[in-house]
Image (tube, rainbow, N blue to C red):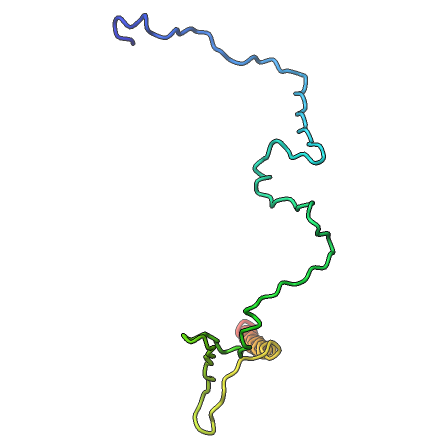
Length: 156
């Protein structure tokens, strides 16, 4: 196994097995000690991973109280920008003047049959969706009725 002359350097091997004892300890383990609670005004000494992911505690030294009314913030640029139609964009040119770019209205057809395209209101969209769904259900019911009649006639 070992080369000649290295037997004295071989590790001590014995037939003893270092197995744990097979007797069970009948007493339950001691309960864990609860973490010490810091006194009021003291910060905790240990910070866990969960505590590092929480937002900071509210500042109790500020003058704000719950339910106190606070003035809304005001913005300067909202008052200086003119109101623009929904399909337009307002930009400033090199001189500082405001230029409004309006998208042309979309139309379909030509001559007297020309019609302007517009978006539908939510109520109109719901009505169109209801009519489409009704027509699909009606068509499917007719197809099923025809299939039942044919199956009854040929199998009967």
